Amino acid sequence: MSVESTEIHRSQFMRDVMAETPDGERLVHCLQCGSCGGSCPNGPDMDYTPRAIFSMIAANRRDDVLKSNTMWCCVSCYFCTARCPQEIPITETMYTLKRMAIREGKATEGDAPALARTFTGFVDKFGRAFEVGIATRYLMLNKPMSGLKSMGMGMSMFARGRLSLRPAKIRQTGQLQAIISKARELSKQERRSGGAS
Image (tube, rainbow, N blue to C red; front, side, top):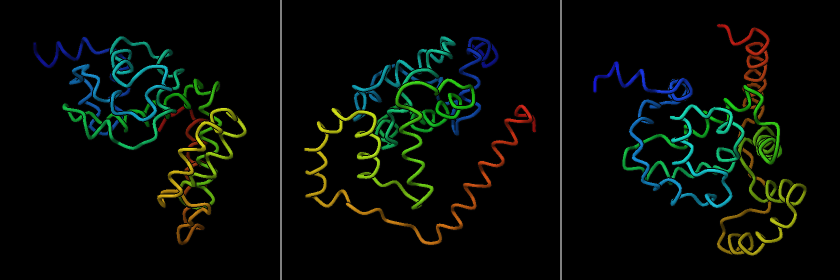
């Protein structure tokens, strides 16, 4: 099959995702092997595994994908990407889907906005994530039963030195905050102009 005829068979959604993802053209090489979903620590909480998401992207099921919680459950551990036999940038694709869902107004229900606000709040303030803060603020306010179930794992991680009770702050947070502020300003301008450059 020629490159031109292969291009015709790609859904518009797939072309959009590929265009916005670094090395996104690799998405067409998905074998549907399931290594990504089997590697994901949050796989059981996802509406669809990454493998299913890629199949849905190919089938042009834009709304179903962008309204799902899959990309919001991604913890960015890159384990799926590291194990993918086709070297598909799975984690980067999840970032693309998050951006698309926000831009298209699909990330308005469920856990996604609350988790994103909690995470970005800590990054804005300290320059990095603060796991204990995210767990207590997000889980206890939004999913208290899930938070209680996770306490054993949290205590085990703390005992092994994997969790800190205090947030670590990067140097020169003022510079980071200026960058974030400028990025938000540019994003607002882009939305007002309808994305035209």
